[in-house]
Length: 175
Image (cartoon, rainbow, N blue to C red):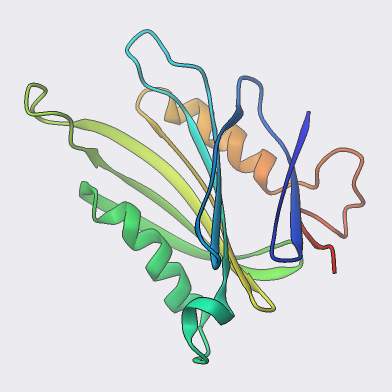
């Protein structure tokens, strides 16, 4: 079932994989809005995650231009700093008719002190800039679920939602 969200004159629509639903929507300031989609809790308490982040670059860049590479490093940096054993590969892609960077990563999520060693995780983040809007699509999950879930989710994020014209893709301006 398609899910939609809006921020700053832009909207997005995506088909969520089965089991995912809107879990949180936050706007900690006028320049940023996030939408978190998650699965229900598994027996061990873990959940799959999809996050859509929309950022007004005019409001956060104070008149400076922002390159796609710098924006991608900033976005993935928040994930990287919470992981050990970090590995990542980057590729240039197109999403919503915009040049984007796809970052596939793996690392260890450190758990509470009573669970030493952490857990292996995998994810994919796709980052792009369209006009004055920066956006990222991010999915991550723990092993062993990430091996099967991450490719399904990335496929859903990179396809136009059902009922939408393919040329519009994920993100469309509502201006």
